[in-house]
Amino acid sequence: MKTDLALIVLSVAAVSLFAAAEELCPKMFGAGMPFLLSSVLYFSSKRPLFVAVPFAIVAGAAEDAVSSLPFVTAMSFFAMAAFACALLKTGVALASVFFPAAFQLWLWIWEPSIGNGVFARVLVSVPAGLFTAFAASAALSFAERKGGLDAA
Image 1: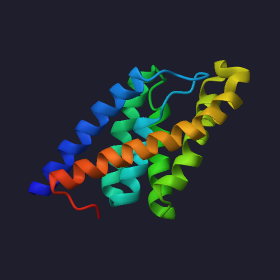
Image 2: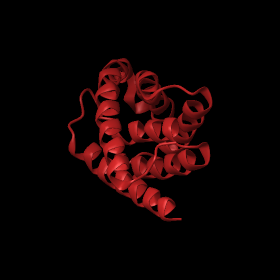
Image 3: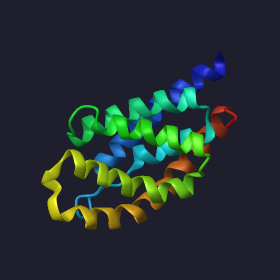
């Protein structure tokens, strides 16, 4: 019970801090730093599916709110990414190359106003995804160690 409460506190803190970091970091060619998506990929590779999917839904709702996206746009992609990462057992590094680029294509489907800039966004999102995956993984694993949570 104590561990479950600590995991909930870590999850809420991660969503809050990473949503703020996404909002504060500059956007290059329209693509921002995917801190929330990286935290979803971290949780889905380290935690069971019944923990990763609710975290992905909450993180997706925060992404929708921070980015002014239509409701459920990021939430649905984050949930699908959590399922895929957990079921395919991909590591965070491999998933952080594919999913940020796929997220930009997902946004292009739902927001055609992106127009011709979608390929620049995809190319920028790959190194941004790698950087944020490293930063989010380091921060979350440090918080798990200091909080006494064992990454399952």
